[in-house]
Image (cartoon, rainbow, N blue to C red):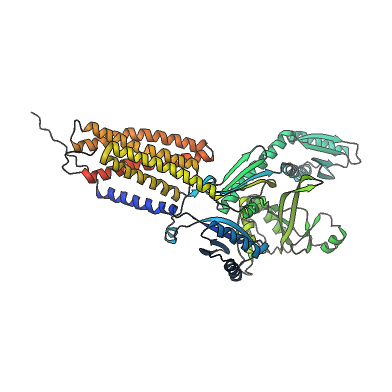
Length: 627
């Protein structure tokens, strides 16, 4: 005879598990709640370059709004920029019109949608999740890269390189010029030309097609880039511009932008939530960069401006107020050597400044230059270039516009290398814009916006309404089926499903992820998959009730179904991770919501429902389960 001991199963959780579950529920509700407050139609007012807003500006804006019988919901001032909230879109559009008329070119007036989250939620970091362009509206740009300028830039990069190479080989030359799509190297005699031919054949055979012209008074070599090199230059320009645009948009704080290549010279840019294109175009299309040059102290700039003659080795530039200055042709370094830039205020004068950090190469060049030129002046040249389409004789022609202004010419007081400050900027706003562009990098080639569309929020509202309808319909259908099939246990599963949706929204909000229509599809799929785990558990409990006690059946249902649930969900999770890794924007949105939904559904279906069932039936004499 054997003495057997029966294990008593009470189906109870320790107190810490209930506490953990309550904390998760409370945090989920709190961080999901900002999404129910919606957005306020807003007008964002920023100062234009060389302009500063003050209390007078704010008072003038408030006065003109009052005259137009417009009452803002809130008037916010953040770092000299105004965010004015309104109750409806009609007031927003009227306000934009009257403020634009008031400020003229003194400010940039842009439409925006500002989250209407209460302050107490904002204070704890609770923010609504971002909505994609298909839901929230925004702007769409199609940008054309000036490939001719990219090729020109590729040629110009070789000018100094070839000069240095020939000096190193002691080859005498007259000049290296870029003209009419080719590099021309001029020599005094044929012997130096032959020496240069040998050097080019050895070091540059993969880059150039070489042609010799001895018929000129000064013999010359004409270099044309090979087709492969031209293709590489164009590809580099396109890829670099995409990278630079992405950096600039990240600096602007636009959530989840879409930046994609289209064809071999165009780029698509989509900015969700941006309703007005003014500021976006200003930042995206700008090709601002810097050049550092020494001042030509010996020449007379006013005489050079009057006669058109400049001393050898120098060029005529102008300050922004029109005052001429002579600078040396040699560029010490450019914006390409800048690794970081931060705007601020000069502690001595209180004027705007930008703190520059250079890379290793730029630091060495600056150190060598300042060491040799203490007491001389060094100028900072601010360069902007863009492409405009103009009509000439009835035909649209692309015209490249380049402006070069000297913003600063200061005496070098001591040697420095990779860290220094630039002053002479007109306003803090200009310093911020310059720092942003330098941090993001210069465009490899100018771009022109060839297509521009503003997608209104009404379309997004319609998409949100239909998407939410699909989620609600699927959700209610699952609730009805679960209650009909599993009675009280089905109601517990329905509570867990509701909590699952709350947690998905809360996590998306915490991650500041972007919800798109494909993302809503992922949530709808999650609603169906979330009850799958409970179906497996409840069916297992039903089977166990035929041979076991009620408490044992409940325990076995959760314990034995776990492996199957984990296997099914982990397989789906791996598939969604692969979709996210290799997919584009819409597919990534679907994969993100599906992945989050799988993780939260396992938690709510296994831990959440088990906690409720334990409270209802655990450690109690139960004669029958409502399942």
